[in-house]
Image (cartoon, rainbow, N blue to C red; front, side):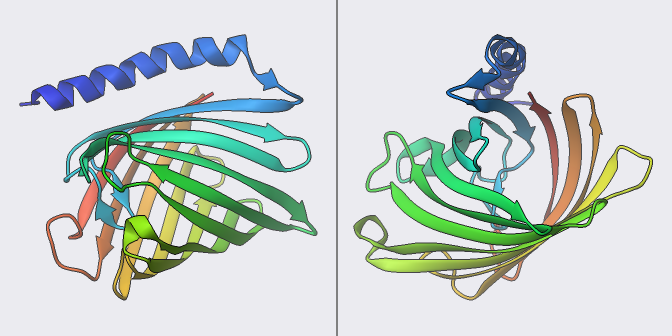
Length: 231
């Protein structure tokens, strides 16, 4: 049976699904750029292989603004399980993405904010280089958190590869992820994921197998189900 928290999470997600298309129809362009909205419900919120929702369901949603020159900003949020006194994670980010000669470059910075949490806010920079082959896209990236007082004056580094392959003439795709983390949030930690998803209109259903090389309830292997909406 669902507990009270799960019912609140699902109710919030359904509210987002109802309100998001209204917002997207009302305003798809702003300040010379384009607005995009997203909402999702996941059976577990895994961040770099480790559960942030205590192996429970999570509701998520965000908004992004893209300028024609490649600059973008956005905000995204998710329910979490008591991160330093907060049960909500919010990400505020901005960056620059451009494609040249078939190569996609992306650089930016993210502020991780946990409302109501104690010493929980931190900044992280990121960058990636990707190639789009049409039915297959793949990127290599690096995220780096400089040492900050909220995280014990210790830095953190995360290398990753994300690959998505679309199955021709079907709405299905296959997603692969491999990451390596070392520093404040990870000690020689590897994580990996293999999943598949199907899209119909603005919705996407997905299932993925996630695991790490670290033992523990939140980092052990798991199968994650998700439903998302994009407007």
